[in-house]
Length: 394
Image (cartoon, rainbow, N blue to C red; front, side, top):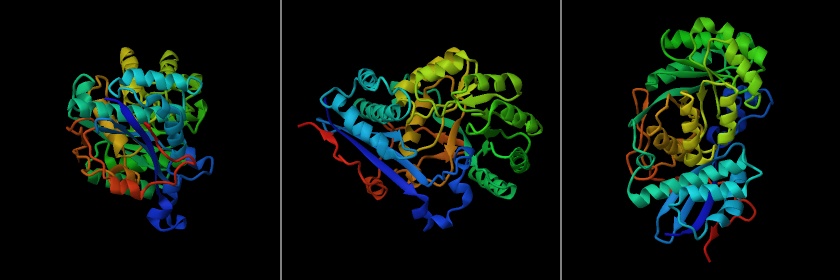
């Protein structure tokens, strides 16, 4: 079997379209977290890049490359940098192909290149599972669980009343853990945390996400201020590149530290482990090199007897890839089931994901275990990159 076609499909579900005008979009949707609010750059919608790989035997694999802020960047890398490396090669050789894609981007091992590799890698694993008639979780060694414990994300940077309304919605959906965005004004953060704790009760896990908006001093002050509310972890208290600052926070507070959603390679996670900067690691499979690289990352973290709690922003394809990967992961802790309005998460799937009693079910079918509604995909397609056409065998 040989790869004959590699196609990248950038998608956008803009809030302007969803709400019928940008002026109608609630402020907490445009600025859901500190990394948007602090720079005054609104989040204008949901974006991702689908990857579709075809073969001479008619099999097709589908993957996802992380799309913020513009999925056309990932699409251009897939079609113009990675596709020439893949055409004509055996798609079942996932490790060999991953190493080839990594090597061609040797000077860009973080960021967009690794995101593009992730999309291709997920598509190759989907294709391999379909070819062998097995779910990806079986190919990774066999599932340890058939569903994943999830937390609802997020209660945005909003006022206490809105925070409580959001928390009640999460409880009504069946969630048993909730994440709250912090990293703004300390008093506002504390008020928001207190408001959510009042709604969810004293025992439910309440997670905090700073989105790298603070320095070490500010993060320590925040952690100490919310001690009465029994929080579960403090995520990205400082920029992930500030290993010394994060390690200082970890040593100074009584909260586990989580990080990793911005990191794209095993080397960055190695550096965090060496610096003893965090307790919980949360790569996004559509950003950190796909299933192949994330397998290596989870093994590395497992060797330090630490936990994984993957980041959960993206479409239904990335969601399915994470479920398959985590099903076979020994050191899995909890998964971020993002609840921000996102048609790309569910509308492009023919069958919705099954969520019950705070858990997401791992799709049982071969490969990713999902079917794509391509008519819905077409509805969200962005204008192509200038070259536009997919590489194909001639």
